[in-house]
Length: 65
Image (cartoon, rainbow, N blue to C red):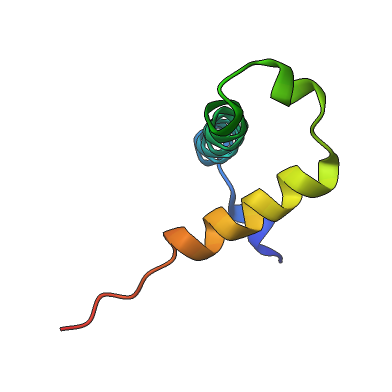
């Protein structure tokens, strides 16, 4: 059976909440960069996807001991 069959409702909720918070932060970063809300009206899906990929790369790290 696949990994999804082992997912609990709580784990699903946490994943959805994590994703929502990540996108909230990404959208806020566009607003801060332009210093106004109007920037959000001109965003493209491609811009958001690119910022998301950059964020994922920046947030992945390896602990070296």
